[in-house]
Image (cartoon, rainbow over all chains, first blue to last red; front, side, top):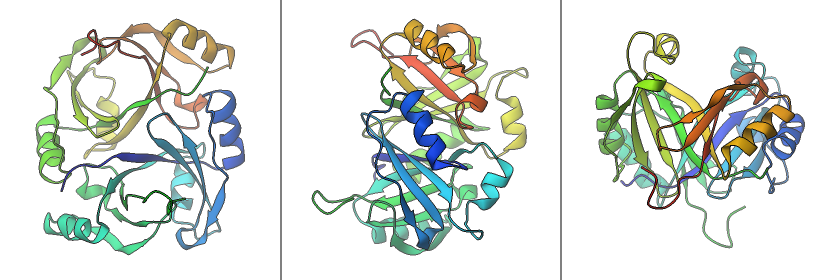
Length: 141
Length: 141
C-alpha cells in the first residue's frame, strides 16, 4: 500500500457555528462547506477547504456521540484524527490487519460519501487514523 | 489574510527511528526525508511526504525540549500541531495579533528554513497552530 493524500485533519469542536466564524474571520478560510449531520457516526460535520486539503470540523451529535468524551477532556476542541485516502478500502483493511493494526469496525459510509474505517491510535503512533476510499469525480460530496 | 496551504501536520514521537519504520512499512510512505536536529526548537525533525502535504515527525531533543511534556503525557506520541503557509510572516503576525490571538514569540527559522511562529491553542480552537512563510523554489529545504 502507498501512503495516499492527506484528505483532511479532523478537528473536534464544541460548536461548529463558532468554529465556522473562527475559520472565516481569523484563519481567512474562503471555502467553508455546508454543515450536515452524520447520525451514523454521531457527529455534525463541516469541511473547511485549504488550497491542498481540508479541515473536517466535527461536533458531537447526541449524548452518545463517540466524540463526547474528547470534548469533555478538551472543552475548546482540538485535533482529533488524520484521514488518508486509499484507492480500495477493502484492500486497505486487509493490509492494516495484516500489519497487526486494529481496524475499528467494518468499512462504512463516511462524511465524503465513500467507505471509511478508523484504525486504533495505539497501533498508529498515537494518532487516531481514518482511512477513506478516494471519492470519484462526480460521485463524491 | 487568506487560509494558506496545510504545509504539514506535526506528529510528536518518542522515536523518529521507529516512526520512520512505521510510516515506511505500515503507512506505505514512499518519500521520507533525512532527519535532522533543530536545536533552536529543541526537537529532532523528519518530514514524511504525502502526495499533497507532509507529516512532520518531531522527537524531543534534550531534556528541556518543549515537547518533552507532550511525550510524557502521550508516551506513544500523537498529533501535536497543524502548520499553514502564509506569503508574509510579519503581516501574518500583525493579523493574528490584531485578532487578539496570542502569538508565541518572534518569528524564527523553522524546519523548512523559512520564518515561522506558533499561535496559542487556546486562541485557535484548541489546536496548536504553526504559521510559516511559504518556501520559495530553490531556497527551501
